[in-house]
Image 1 (cartoon, helix red, strand yellow):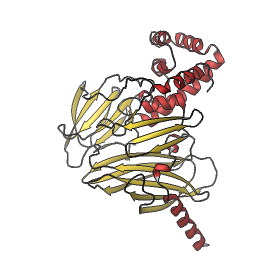
Image 2 (spheres, rainbow, N blue to C red; image 1 turned 120 degrees about the horizontal axis):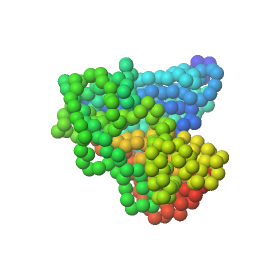
Image 3 (cartoon, rainbow, N blue to C red; image 1 turned 90 degrees about the horizontal axis):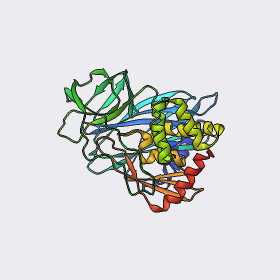
Length: 388
């Protein structure tokens, strides 16, 4: 029996590792209903890259299931099988979380670290690629108690400790209150990427490892050397983020599905719920449809904030906009510099190009095209009729 089980694990590992990632569907990265929930943060220091991660099993079930976690080194996304670095067997029941770290040496040329998680009882696998680059800018992190914060956003007023490079004694903190613009439609020639130079509204110095709370919302950048292109950033929001509950927060995400007059009316409501509800009912032309619309739309806004928050709120990004309007792609393919989303029903492909910066190393911008015009307006019409 022991021999058979061991052979089974080896067989699973062979199958999971024999496929090129360039041909693998990675839509589980943004699937809230998937069995696996993996959060992670990469930090560079002293010639190494450390992956801090949190793994949770969200599938419903009463009995624990065994999962195999395998870390593998590959040269590129197209390589079919790489070198196994570490394997762990773990028992996780729904709601349980495994926290961990893995440190790897940096090389002159980029390479890829691949985490594969296999459910032994079903042979289902989930792949998570990490591109390891020597010029990766993130060299610090935030801690909540003893745990490294893996999200790209912090809660306003809550105490955190700020940890920069071990060699630094002091850190400089910059705050940007800029209200970044939301993404333009996929057929627009305009883009809304990061500004080439962001000017901070305020700055202050702290000791490395110091505990503090942030009293103002916005984008924050922490650096140990202000003359370098290294540091780490995060956004600060109210305690409900990534969910929106205040009327004043609900207005802006509606820019994608409203006319100019409707959007102006919403902006001028000044948090008045009666005016807000009346405008939304006017959009959907029915109270019940308005309720369905609100539930569906803001569920996606919340998920966009969770998955795509960068130097700006997740819903404002190109990926966030696409996720909100078109939903989870049927397929996602990745390369070192692109992410491609496929929607089968509309036979549509969206290509996102990596345009990372010190403020957001994993930021992607959409390749826009006029051919998306009809699809966009047809889909917006469905939203306004609450057919989602």
